[in-house]
Length: 139
Image (cartoon, rainbow, N blue to C red):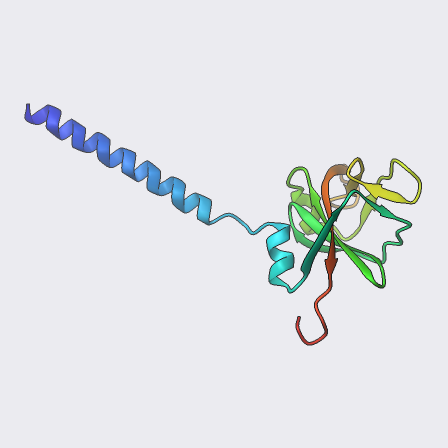
């Protein structure tokens, strides 16, 4: 009887330890691109299906699941990706695919070359948001 009781206590302890490990792992996740943008003072605007007549003048890495694209002096977009694209953090240049001329949409992708001679990776766009830049001094 004592052996059965002891085994039940051991099983309960292992179960609780497993739950605690799961909770701590979930709280140590890296922040998402949306969380980073908000933390940096960007105001999330409306979700858009497309970016028309854009002229990309650079880009800003936020997290493995998204980036900021300044498409004109007055418009910046938060581009969230369908899957994590860890290569974004270590690349200096990106490319963009477009299914329709002068329009970037959810059917397109961010092209990443992790290093010279490396294999290109296409990171497909999931959602696009218009964001408002933080005011000077608020950054």
